[in-house]
Length: 211
Image 1 (cartoon, rainbow, N blue to C red):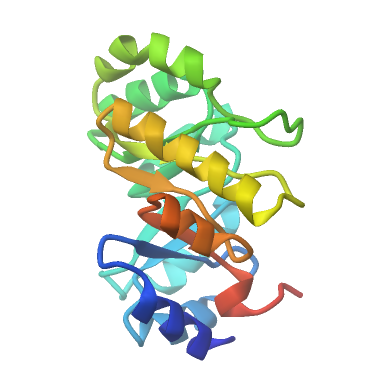
Image 2 (tube, one colour):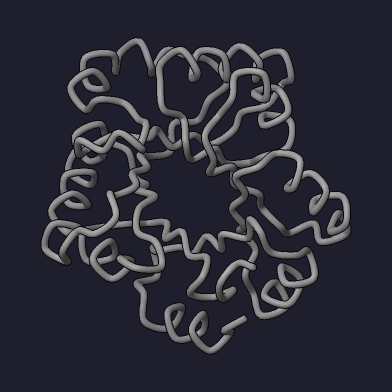
Protein backbone atom coordinates (compact mmCIF):
# COMPACT_ATOMS: atom_id res chain seq x y z
CA UNK A 1 0.00 0.00 0.00
CA UNK A 2 1.34 3.41 -0.94
CA UNK A 3 -0.06 5.91 1.55
CA UNK A 4 2.49 8.55 0.53
CA UNK A 5 1.06 8.48 -3.04
CA UNK A 6 -2.42 8.92 -1.60
CA UNK A 7 -1.41 11.87 0.59
CA UNK A 8 0.51 13.51 -2.24
CA UNK A 9 -2.50 13.38 -4.59
CA UNK A 10 -4.85 14.48 -1.81
CA UNK A 11 -2.70 17.54 -1.22
CA UNK A 12 -2.53 18.68 -4.85
CA UNK A 13 -6.07 18.11 -6.15
CA UNK A 14 -8.62 20.95 -5.91
CA UNK A 15 -11.01 20.90 -2.94
CA UNK A 16 -13.99 19.93 -5.13
CA UNK A 17 -12.27 16.73 -6.35
CA UNK A 18 -12.86 13.55 -4.34
CA UNK A 19 -10.77 10.41 -4.27
CA UNK A 20 -12.69 7.16 -4.61
CA UNK A 21 -10.36 4.43 -3.35
CA UNK A 22 -11.01 1.42 -5.59
CA UNK A 23 -10.76 -1.36 -3.03
CA UNK A 24 -11.95 -4.29 -5.17
CA UNK A 25 -9.46 -7.10 -4.76
CA UNK A 26 -8.04 -5.65 -1.54
CA UNK A 27 -8.79 -6.65 2.05
CA UNK A 28 -10.97 -5.01 4.66
CA UNK A 29 -7.81 -4.49 6.73
CA UNK A 30 -6.29 -2.45 3.89
CA UNK A 31 -9.48 -0.40 3.72
CA UNK A 32 -9.20 0.21 7.47
CA UNK A 33 -5.58 1.36 7.12
CA UNK A 34 -6.41 4.04 4.57
CA UNK A 35 -9.63 4.99 6.37
CA UNK A 36 -7.49 5.79 9.42
CA UNK A 37 -5.95 8.70 7.51
CA UNK A 38 -9.27 10.13 6.39
CA UNK A 39 -10.41 8.18 3.30
CA UNK A 40 -14.11 7.29 3.60
CA UNK A 41 -15.23 6.59 0.02
CA UNK A 42 -14.54 3.12 -1.38
CA UNK A 43 -15.39 1.62 -4.77
CA UNK A 44 -16.29 -2.02 -5.32
CA UNK A 45 -17.34 -3.84 -8.48
CA UNK A 46 -18.38 -7.30 -7.24
CA UNK A 47 -21.39 -7.40 -4.97
CA UNK A 48 -20.48 -10.46 -2.87
CA UNK A 49 -16.94 -9.28 -2.16
CA UNK A 50 -18.21 -5.83 -1.19
CA UNK A 51 -20.95 -7.24 1.03
CA UNK A 52 -18.45 -9.32 3.01
CA UNK A 53 -16.21 -6.28 3.56
CA UNK A 54 -19.21 -4.18 4.61
CA UNK A 55 -20.08 -6.75 7.28
CA UNK A 56 -16.52 -6.82 8.63
CA UNK A 57 -16.31 -3.01 8.67
CA UNK A 58 -19.87 -2.28 9.85
CA UNK A 59 -18.61 -0.35 12.91
CA UNK A 60 -16.99 2.27 10.65
CA UNK A 61 -20.17 4.29 10.17
CA UNK A 62 -18.52 7.02 8.10
CA UNK A 63 -17.64 4.66 5.22
CA UNK A 64 -19.49 5.34 1.97
CA UNK A 65 -19.70 2.51 -0.54
CA UNK A 66 -19.76 3.13 -4.30
CA UNK A 67 -20.70 0.45 -6.82
CA UNK A 68 -18.48 0.84 -9.90
CA UNK A 69 -18.84 -2.51 -11.70
CA UNK A 70 -21.04 -3.66 -14.53
CA UNK A 71 -24.60 -3.92 -13.22
CA UNK A 72 -26.38 -7.25 -13.62
CA UNK A 73 -30.17 -6.91 -13.56
CA UNK A 74 -30.54 -9.71 -10.99
CA UNK A 75 -28.23 -7.85 -8.57
CA UNK A 76 -29.99 -4.46 -8.74
CA UNK A 77 -31.94 -4.89 -5.50
CA UNK A 78 -28.84 -5.87 -3.54
CA UNK A 79 -26.88 -2.97 -5.04
CA UNK A 80 -29.63 -0.48 -4.12
CA UNK A 81 -29.81 -1.89 -0.58
CA UNK A 82 -26.05 -1.65 0.04
CA UNK A 83 -24.53 1.24 -1.92
CA UNK A 84 -24.90 5.01 -1.46
CA UNK A 85 -23.51 5.69 -4.95
CA UNK A 86 -23.85 3.76 -8.20
CA UNK A 87 -21.30 4.88 -10.82
CA UNK A 88 -21.96 2.50 -13.66
CA UNK A 89 -25.57 2.84 -14.81
CA UNK A 90 -25.11 2.20 -18.52
CA UNK A 91 -28.66 2.07 -19.93
CA UNK A 92 -32.11 3.60 -19.52
CA UNK A 93 -33.59 0.13 -18.81
CA UNK A 94 -31.24 -0.40 -15.84
CA UNK A 95 -31.91 3.10 -14.55
CA UNK A 96 -35.67 2.40 -14.68
CA UNK A 97 -35.16 -0.84 -12.73
CA UNK A 98 -33.01 0.97 -10.15
CA UNK A 99 -35.75 3.60 -9.79
CA UNK A 100 -38.47 0.97 -9.32
CA UNK A 101 -36.43 -0.99 -6.75
CA UNK A 102 -35.41 2.22 -4.94
CA UNK A 103 -39.10 3.15 -4.56
CA UNK A 104 -39.85 -0.28 -3.06
CA UNK A 105 -36.81 -0.16 -0.77
CA UNK A 106 -37.40 3.50 0.21
CA UNK A 107 -33.87 4.38 -0.93
CA UNK A 108 -32.50 7.18 -3.11
CA UNK A 109 -29.02 6.23 -4.35
CA UNK A 110 -26.82 8.84 -5.99
CA UNK A 111 -26.44 7.87 -9.64
CA UNK A 112 -23.66 8.46 -12.15
CA UNK A 113 -24.74 7.63 -15.69
CA UNK A 114 -22.00 5.92 -17.65
CA UNK A 115 -21.39 7.49 -21.05
CA UNK A 116 -19.53 5.86 -23.90
CA UNK A 117 -17.43 8.48 -25.66
CA UNK A 118 -15.27 6.29 -27.88
CA UNK A 119 -15.72 3.23 -30.04
CA UNK A 120 -14.47 0.68 -27.51
CA UNK A 121 -16.24 -2.73 -27.64
CA UNK A 122 -15.10 -3.56 -24.09
CA UNK A 123 -16.95 -0.59 -22.54
CA UNK A 124 -20.66 -0.03 -22.00
CA UNK A 125 -22.54 3.20 -21.52
CA UNK A 126 -25.13 5.62 -22.87
CA UNK A 127 -24.58 6.99 -26.32
CA UNK A 128 -24.34 10.77 -25.61
CA UNK A 129 -26.99 11.70 -28.20
CA UNK A 130 -29.41 9.12 -26.77
CA UNK A 131 -28.75 10.36 -23.23
CA UNK A 132 -29.54 13.95 -24.21
CA UNK A 133 -32.67 12.96 -26.17
CA UNK A 134 -34.03 10.88 -23.23
CA UNK A 135 -33.03 13.41 -20.57
CA UNK A 136 -36.56 14.65 -19.83
CA UNK A 137 -37.73 11.04 -19.30
CA UNK A 138 -34.66 10.26 -17.19
CA UNK A 139 -35.23 13.25 -14.92
CA UNK A 140 -38.80 12.15 -14.18
CA UNK A 141 -37.71 8.82 -12.66
CA UNK A 142 -38.36 8.61 -8.92
CA UNK A 143 -35.98 7.80 -6.04
CA UNK A 144 -32.76 8.23 -8.00
CA UNK A 145 -30.57 11.28 -7.36
CA UNK A 146 -28.86 12.04 -10.65
CA UNK A 147 -25.48 13.23 -9.49
CA UNK A 148 -23.31 13.14 -12.61
CA UNK A 149 -21.70 11.20 -15.43
CA UNK A 150 -19.07 8.49 -15.41
CA UNK A 151 -16.75 7.48 -18.21
CA UNK A 152 -13.87 5.04 -18.69
CA UNK A 153 -11.37 5.82 -21.43
CA UNK A 154 -9.94 3.02 -23.60
CA UNK A 155 -6.45 1.81 -22.70
CA UNK A 156 -3.43 3.04 -24.63
CA UNK A 157 -4.53 6.61 -25.38
CA UNK A 158 -2.11 9.52 -25.39
CA UNK A 159 -2.41 12.19 -22.70
CA UNK A 160 -4.00 14.53 -25.27
CA UNK A 161 -6.57 11.89 -26.34
CA UNK A 162 -7.47 11.20 -22.69
CA UNK A 163 -7.92 14.93 -22.09
CA UNK A 164 -10.22 15.34 -25.08
CA UNK A 165 -12.55 12.54 -23.96
CA UNK A 166 -12.64 13.81 -20.38
CA UNK A 167 -13.45 17.34 -21.57
CA UNK A 168 -16.27 15.92 -23.67
CA UNK A 169 -17.69 14.18 -20.60
CA UNK A 170 -17.47 17.39 -18.56
CA UNK A 171 -19.15 19.35 -21.34
CA UNK A 172 -22.10 16.91 -21.53
CA UNK A 173 -22.46 16.95 -17.72
CA UNK A 174 -22.51 20.76 -17.74
CA UNK A 175 -25.12 20.85 -20.51
CA UNK A 176 -27.36 18.58 -18.37
CA UNK A 177 -26.61 20.67 -15.25
CA UNK A 178 -24.95 17.75 -13.47
CA UNK A 179 -22.23 18.65 -10.98
CA UNK A 180 -20.25 15.40 -10.88
CA UNK A 181 -17.91 13.67 -13.31
CA UNK A 182 -16.51 10.32 -12.18
CA UNK A 183 -13.52 9.97 -14.51
CA UNK A 184 -9.81 9.36 -14.34
CA UNK A 185 -8.01 6.36 -12.87
CA UNK A 186 -4.49 5.64 -11.67
CA UNK A 187 -2.97 6.16 -15.15
CA UNK A 188 -4.82 9.28 -16.29
CA UNK A 189 -6.08 11.09 -13.19
CA UNK A 190 -4.11 14.28 -13.87
CA UNK A 191 -5.79 14.79 -17.27
CA UNK A 192 -9.16 14.09 -15.61
CA UNK A 193 -8.58 16.73 -12.91
CA UNK A 194 -7.60 19.30 -15.55
CA UNK A 195 -10.78 18.48 -17.50
CA UNK A 196 -13.09 18.92 -14.51
CA UNK A 197 -13.40 15.54 -12.76
CA UNK A 198 -15.00 15.57 -9.32
CA UNK A 199 -14.38 11.88 -8.53
CA UNK A 200 -11.10 10.06 -9.29
CA UNK A 201 -11.25 6.26 -9.16
CA UNK A 202 -7.81 5.29 -7.84
CA UNK A 203 -6.84 1.69 -7.11
CA UNK A 204 -3.30 0.49 -7.84
CA UNK A 205 -1.82 3.96 -7.26
CA UNK A 206 -2.74 3.83 -3.59
CA UNK A 207 -3.23 0.12 -2.81
CA UNK A 208 -0.47 -1.26 -5.03
CA UNK A 209 -0.92 -4.06 -7.56
CA UNK A 210 -3.67 -6.61 -7.04
CA UNK A 211 -2.38 -10.09 -6.32
